[in-house]
Image (cartoon, rainbow, N blue to C red; front, side):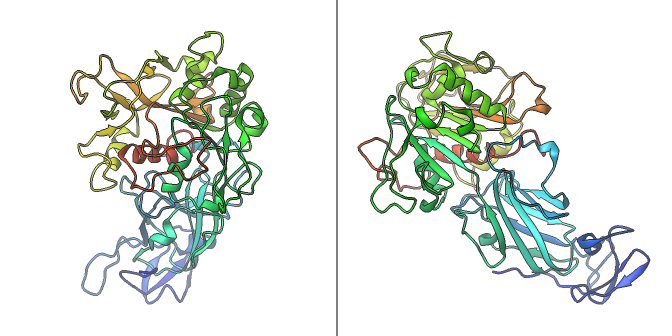
Length: 476
């Protein structure tokens, strides 16, 4: 497709008290948007009173497109697209306090946020040459430069230029730079989060051990239900063995702070011996500093505490939810509900999951989950946002459940500060990420990873994977 105007109009424009002719501006009189201007702001035009030769009203100068995950097929909700007022500069390294209220880096002359279909219409774009555009959610960022934009036109952008980067070298002809977050994943025998990132399109050369120069580091826990601990021969990200999670990963807050996001894949039990109180405190302090934590199933120890020792835990995190550390429902393939009442993004999440967007729900607001787990009974709605839950009234088959269960929820940190002063996010999931993949020390990564299309629950958790990277607070 390429970058091309749908409707080209040539304009002659005025800036403040004088007129300026620009080769992208043309032959029709139109005032600039501001009375006084400088830089790109001088090329923002008011198209509201303009018409084409047939008398039809002209649109505002607009860039349109769809933002996708690195795989180029999964549209993403809640991604910022903007023309920066000044150079956004580099992103801070490691965990930072990224609050939505701080605004977009470099400021914005005009900004948009992708909708439930991943689509955006960025209006009032400067009509000139070499217009910079930033596409960003958290530290996923692609910066592009549009060679020329004519005033009062709608210009579609190719998907290749609006897809989040799969690697640090994922450049396109329009791309000027790309950024990716640093992510640490601890593997586990009962889940395979490290397999989901492949389905999301992350380049294998960006996945390696903590000793490698990759954006995603895999760790392993020999004491717990150990997941993958080695890489297959010839792996592009390197074949160095994965580092022990206990020693240089979650026992040291300064090591944790190197990462923007920490993901903990279920080990099949809590294994508190590998997660002493000092480690719980380090993870707690990491999130308080702006870190993002995603905990799968039995990693509930970080949030709900040790189910055998009440003194082993973090009281403020324990207060966010009620855990019963229950067993597995039978059968464990159940219909889960998306919370569209108590979660400000719940309705958008449900719409995104349904047809025709990603097709994760055959019935809007519901999704089928395999390997369902019910360790969390409920959440405190004043402290958390619930994403997905199980309800006996809608359980399929009927009679499977006897009580409600909070399957996914999120809270922000530090919990002792007002919500507008918080910096980090913690997500808990009783829904395994990759139910059709396996992870174990006897199988080098990624030999246990399924190559099947994304399952409904993988799509649901992909939504949360990118949402956890976003700023704390609301931009909507």
